[in-house]
Image (tube, rainbow, N blue to C red; front, side, top):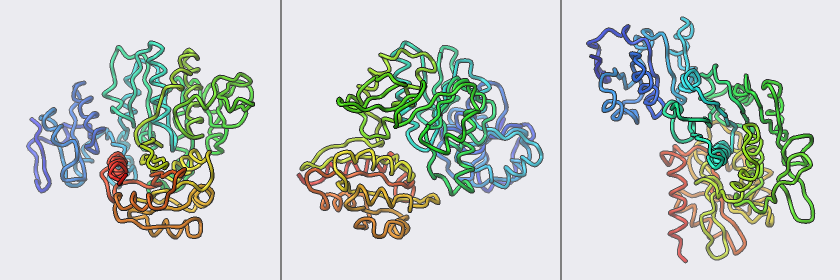
Length: 460
């Protein structure tokens, strides 16, 4: 019987060589991998560098016979494994993983396990920003068409937990981290929505980051290409067929925008489909998300009227340019999911359609190696002030000097109060941090909730 092995124990009761599969990382994804492998009769061990990984108690309860090694990575545990299933949060540059690769051990992730098992068609969505919105839009469209579609991956449930013979369509939102260890994923349709600098604390360059994203097009039946993004356009030619989307006038059978005296239309080629003013989703970046969803939906022959109906009624996801409330004529938006500069740029420009320099931006957190000078022009064009929080405050001050008045806040409550002081009727306040949340919060959801609560506590 395998046993729990904790930090400080030098011996185990069972030889390590009986567990040829090692799950590296015990969060939600690692737990799903251990569950899947155990359910299919494969002996497995689990390791995590943390003393108390988040899924430890759940694994011990659900899979008490699985050996768990916590409190640091141990060379003998890695050396005993022929297959290492690596969680997205663990870098492949970890020395023990490099050593395992050097001896030809198989290093994969949960998406690779999923791809080898899934029987139904798969649509894959990735990109720096907009993944969750497009995945959810497409999921609602598919279900409205009567298809038993399930969503997961980087959004919601881990992919392995979705496997079911009754599923007719899998919709996977995937991060670059998940794609690093994936080789056998062949999608019926795939899209890289956009590329902007992100996770440069893990990648040597934006080119390395983009190359990882581009893996989803390999073997795809239809690749959906963002014609406005040069780095995505450079990925063309990998899928069997391709269709594009653009915020300009589309050509051929691409999706895009057309304008007439009535307004701006979502369009396919020459055909006008729906006025963007009929959408509940705010901002031009959501026009791009809508066009991408339409292109993916067309790839699997979803009925167009139903897809347009979804676009008329879908109000968006929490923490993604989410309208919170209006107070004294000021609109408050929660874009806590904006964890990189590209997301913040899109949110600022997207909300800027009703008068320039009417936005107060709240930004800051963990920089992740970001170059914040990319924000200079949009901050100059759209904001009347920026309130800075978190450990990236000084770096943001250096990067944005001279673009707009800059203010510091120690807490989210203080940031919200300062933003309220800077606004008058007709303005808007946007939380779009351009940073990760881990210096002040557990995750972006907690950060967004703290912002929302602080806004609701403002004096009338």
